[in-house]
Length: 438
Ligand SMILES: Nc1ncnc2c1ncn2[C@@H]1O[C@H](COP(=O)(O)OP(=O)(O)OP(=O)(O)O)[C@@H](O)[C@H]1O
Image 1 (cartoon, rainbow, N blue to C red):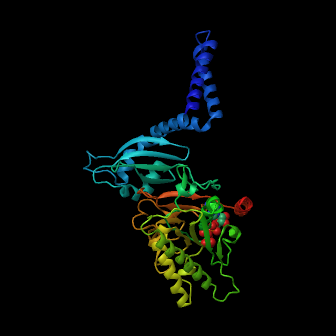
Image 2: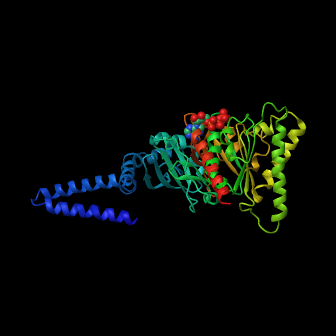
Image 3: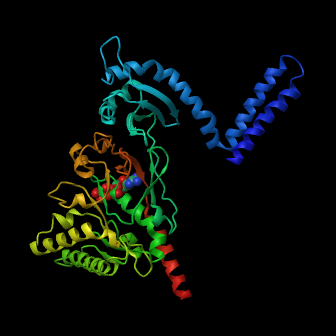
């Protein structure tokens, strides 16, 4: 902020000095001042576009849009969306507060009328967007103000740009891995310790990019031996094989093995053994396991969960796999044995234990019902319209975040093959250095 103040003072000084030096005649004075002001603003914008936008461009834009769009259309919009109350003539209209703008979104603070809820606004989001000429209208709750909401009117699709992977360090493991961009421009951090992650999405929705965003972000912790990844890729290794160098164990359903599901069952059973062992040692000592090099976090990554829960034909194997998965999902996270799995079809008959995943991400799905199945009842009504994500936006999805009533829309990083290869190289280099030192 210090730099900003200096910049601002420099601009003011430039205006005064130029105005004073050029203003030798009565008409030059205002012209000189104006010219100097314009020049100062141009320099400001050139030198620090982010602060210029935040302090000058966006506040002016908010005022302009409020004056041109929201002021004249507000009452009509509320009336036509059925958000007013009382008899005609003395209609009560929800009060509009401050408007904030960015280049993509207008955010309007609204005070609810007695008896109104956030869901009332979310249910008519389409109408509000249409009336205000926006692409979409999303409703957010306001922290510690249960009678207020924030309307987000999307002027441009904020998640259109592909997101590059974020650089990470071992410290990110504790604070949440940076894996995507939220529609308000912030970085989305995903907690990994103490949770299981379920990724739901139709084919081509970008489930692979979520898996890889997490794995890539974990690379420093994997290289630091704080995390060990056990990967299962039932699609013959097509999705995960490129990053096999990062994994401690990798099962991919080798076609030469008649019962390759046996290897999946064994991997899960081994994870259960570690879980049991840790339970015995941690009982009465700690309630949540903290990863160390001696006791790392074990993350079991499963690319297509349905191949383990629904498509296994051998009854005995199916029972073994389901038994282990159930145990890991219900007891593993406290002792540092967690699961991250992707699936296309979230129905109960395909994934009976889906409610045991505390972190759930829904990318584009084909049916509205899949949103409710994946994220829980009422979440779609609060804005998680995953069935309406266009096919042109792979990697975009909704995430439920602890403490937020409204689902968060995120675009996950796009991880290319060369990003994965580079992560494997970094990992090998770190291991080689560690071995050379010890
Ligand atoms: N985050 C992203 N940003 C930009 N493009 C992406 C992103 N994620 C995926 N894509 C694009 O979408 C395509 C499909 O992605 P991906 O293979 O990850 O989908 P999927 O859900 O795993 O599909 P399937 O279930 O068929 O394996 C990719 O080839 C990639 O080009």
